[in-house]
Structures are given as C-alpha cells and as structure tokens.
Length: 458
Image (cartoon, rainbow, N blue to C red):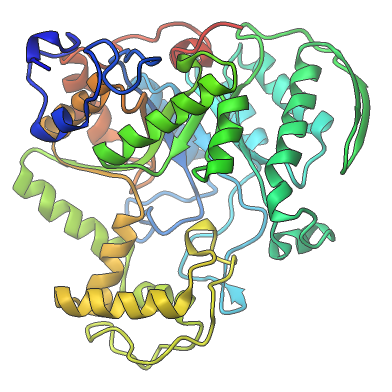
C-alpha cells in the first residue's frame, strides 16, 4: 500500500507501525465494511471518584462544587468537545472493609447536575452514566427524555450494568442478577426506554419486571438520547453492537485500537446494522507540554501527585488482601503471599477478580526485573491502566492524526488529571493543531449531540 493510496486526511506518510496494521485497500484499511471518516470528536469525563484526578494541589477544585463543573464544561465547549460525561457510583469505594479515604469519594446526582449545566451551555452534549440494574426503565427513560428536550437534543446515556452483591446491599437486593444475565437484563431495559421515547405502547413481561406504559413526551431535535456503552468483554461488545451509538474502550495503543475496531465492526454488521453506526471513543489521559523533554518531566510530576506512598501501599493491599503498612514504599514489593485468592469488587472494575496468587508473583518478578520499588511500580501500573496520550503538542497531534486516518478510533473520552483546568492545554494547544491537520472540527456540526458525534439521524 503506497502513501498515494492513503486517505487524504493528512499529507504525512503512515508510520511503520501503522503500515503493518493495514490489511485492505485505502478506502477500507481495517475492514471491508468500514470507511474511515478521518475525523475526531472529544468528550470530557468528570469521574469524581478516582485516583487519576489530582485533588491535593492549591489549584484543584472541589469535586462537588458547582464552579468545578461549570468551569470545566465551559472550557470543553470552547474547545468544541462533543460531550460532557458524568460517572456514577452507587456505593462508596472501600479499602479493607472501610471507605477508602485516600480516594476522592462522592459526587452529585448526574441528571440533576446535567440539567443545570444545560442552562449554561449551548451545544455540548450532556451524558449521564446510569445503571440498568438498580433503576426502573420507564422512570429513568422519562428523566433522560426530559433532559433531552430541555437541552434541545443534547442528552446521552452511558448504559452500565452491575451484578455484585456488595453494590446490591445498598438496594436491599443482594446481587440481584446473575453475572451472565446482566446484559440480557440491560438490553430489555434499553428496549423499553426506546419504546417510551418513540411514543410506543409498551407491553413487556420479563424475568425481572413487567411494564405497561405509553410514551407521553414529544421527541427532541435529535430524536432520542444517544446511547453509550463501555463493555470490553465479548458479551459487552455484542451488547454495544446491538444497541449502542458509541462505545468506550480501554485501548490506548494503535494496535489494540485497530483490533477493537475490527471486532466492533464485525459484531455491528452481524447484528444487522451499518458498520458506521457505532462510534468508538477510548477513555484517555492526556498530558502535554511544548517539548518531549518537558512532557516527560510533566508526566513524572503528575504521577507523583496521583500516587503517593500511602496510595501505593493501598493499591498492593487490594491484591494481597492483607495489611502491608510495615513495608517501605521505597523498598521492593512484599515477599509475603496474598491472603485472598481473588480480589473483590469494593474498588471498582479495575480491581475485580484478579487471581491474586498468580498476579502478585508476576508483579514481584516484574518489579525485580525493572528494579522498581513499591512506589515506582504502583505509579507505573496506575498509568498503564489508562489509555495515555502524552508528549509534545505536535507529537500527540501527529499520533492522533494516524489513529484518525486508519479509522481506529472516532475520538477520545478524556479524563482530566486536574479539575477544572485540566483541559486548558488540550483546548489551547492540541486542538488547534488537530484543526490545522484537518481531523478536528473548527465549529460544531450542528446543535445536537448526535450531529456532533457524526451519528446518522434517527
């Protein structure tokens, strides 16, 4: 495949890495049913409960203060971001049986906050993470439709599932769902919501609830809320291919993103939909500076603030299942066996179900081989769990152009490492370079979230 045959999104030739991943003709470099648009959309993900956002600096905002949300969303809209996302947590994270005090915990109700943000923004999409296991489908769907109407067609729903008894205890339902049934339940839930949004008569009898209802609100300018989904497992990908408009992914490398795109396209087409019907926005951390050297120094500074000695020990304790406070964070990884066979669910999906004995042995070997202390190892692991785009403004822009040209992704869902100013470098320095390279919009495509994600109209 020659450079002249490549899509004309940029003049520079593809890197050797990218060339090796291309298997088809120029117009279909990754899959015969998928033609890259060469365009990127950005979303900003305000998690609120996480270890990736730095809350200890003087300039750090308050995770429940209106000013933090308003400032961030205004910056994102200035940068023509397609969407503003709010995460959801149905129970406080815990560490060895008690709330995890080293992590920021607690955030306002997503839909209430997004309704308020609709009044101070004009175009950016407003997306709430909401759970299908512990909500009523008609009630939740009507609240989303109300947000969609009030915002002029800017609402989105990040559909998530939960099946663990730890979360279920908050709702007096225990686990409520078998793990294998979570997407079956979620798909029925979503179909009921869509019927309500379309004004249809709902007559549903399922394993978990029966519904008799009728939609009573008009459709918004975008038709109905945009559906997002984050499942990376085969079952999650199948669910996304059948129901979602946008899928999040944890794939930050070009090779992993290409393989995920191929998988989603294959599943989407098999589900009877067009290959372009599902957009992919990987979750990402973006750390930028004027030069590569400055960016490297900035990344180290960010990691030092994200993961301190106490966080490093606590991270290992999640997998060892025992008190490790006597170990020196600047010393080698613990040489004691774990007290659990598998990690629990109290710290979220990133900590679940790892085989502790095998994992801790592998970690000790890895750290010893790299000459890393507990603190150095924990900082490396924390960074590797995120899709990370770090470097100089120009280098990151060129890298994203390559992702866009191949059609590996349709954009990024960015978690700022600082609130509320963590998007400033992106909006002021990265986005202008992406616009110059022709892969990012200079103006919004329209007034609705669906338009600004490049999704087909309903």
